[in-house]
Image 1 (cartoon, rainbow, N blue to C red):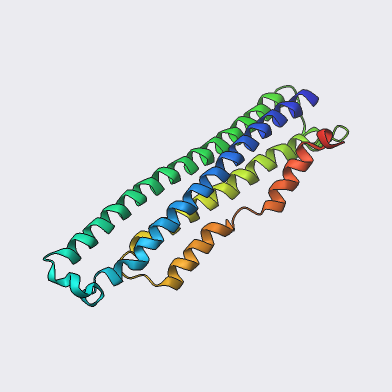
Image 2: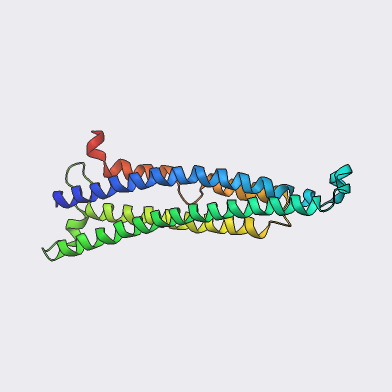
Length: 199
């Protein structure tokens, strides 16, 4: 039993590494989103001839500026989609760790691990059930957050030619907040899993 808990703790160390990757991707996505928002925010102004003043005398200047901005926006959206794919890889990794953790318990059940034993704590170590539930919770949180991030990027794309500053600001805030990942809950899971390291 103690060996199985240690096995789970090793999984959670890998989860911590994935959380660090997630935070790095979060910073990258926010930067990409700000860059895309800046372009989207000025597209309407770029399409108004009145904003070009004397430059209107240059044939095709408005179209050239608009086309260049759309090319830049397209490149940023491609980068954002790549970042989203990397978020998805982390979600898949968390799912695999949970699935492997369930298999570990299933294999253990062949050695007559009972429900009571799954709930049993050994000293300050967490129970096997808590470890398994923790992996599931972390996967579910990050899966939901990945879906939200994908939706926000998709919404930004659909707002390209009809956005308002308030829409862009609201979408940006959703990305900043990461509402599906309560930091206190994540930290409490790690605190319990690694309780022996703290003592």
